Image 1: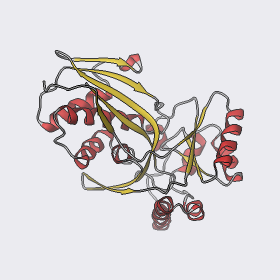
Image 2: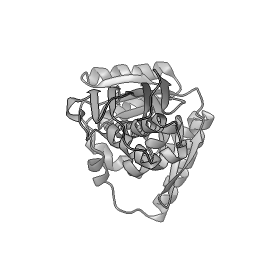
Image 3: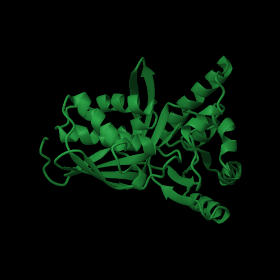
Image 4: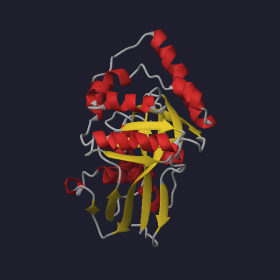
Length: 298
C-alpha cells in the first residue's frame, strides 16, 4: 500500500496561456492497495466510484506504457481540490494515476516520460507540468513532446484564492476566445509572459505588476465569472495582482504583503459568503509518493 499526493495547480497566470503553471498547497491524496482483480474506489464523489474514474484511467494508461497488465487495485481518494474551478483537478487525477502505476512497477518512467503521458491525456501541459515538477513551470510542445522549464520561485510571494460556488468548464472558457490574433498581440503576450516568469523567480513586485497585464484570454473570460471585475478591482486597490486561475472560475491573488492579502480575503468573503476564500502557498514539490507498506507486483 502506498499514497500519492498531487498538488493543485493554477495555469496560465494571466499572460502565460497554455504555457505557465504554478503548484499550490491544496492536494489530491490517493491510497493504492492491491486486490485480487478489478478496481474498487473509495472516497471522492460517488458518481466517479467506477472504472471510468479518471485516476483509474490514468493508472491503466501508465500500466500500458510500462508494458504491464493492469493489476487489481483499490484506490482511496481524499481530495481538497475543487472540480471545474481552474485549479487543475483533472490534471491532479491524471498525474496521481500515472504516478501510482509507475510506483507500482518500481518506477521505470522518469518525470519527463510521465509528463508526456499526462499531456497526452490532458490535451495541454500547463497544469500537469507543475503537478509533476512543483513550483512554477513553463511548457511548450515540440511536435507531440512537451518540453518543460522549471523555475524556483522567490519565497516572498503571498497567494490567495477566491473560489466561487459555481463551476466553469474548460470547454466553455475556451469557446469564448478568438481563433486568431495579430503579430502585435502575439509579441505583446510573449514579452509579458517572459517577464512574468522572471518576476516570480526574482521576487520583483514592480516587474510582476507590469507583466501581468493579459490581453489574450482574461478580457474574454472575465464575463463568465460573476463578481470577477469587482474582485479584481478590490485587489488592485490593495496593490495585489489578481487574475483568473486556469480557465476559472477561481480567482488568484498574488502579492508580497500578507496584511493586504488578508484584507482582500475578508472583503471578498463578506461580499460572497458562500465562496471559499483562503490563503495558499506555492508548493515547491510536485507529486510525492509515500510507502505505507510493501506492494507486491500483480
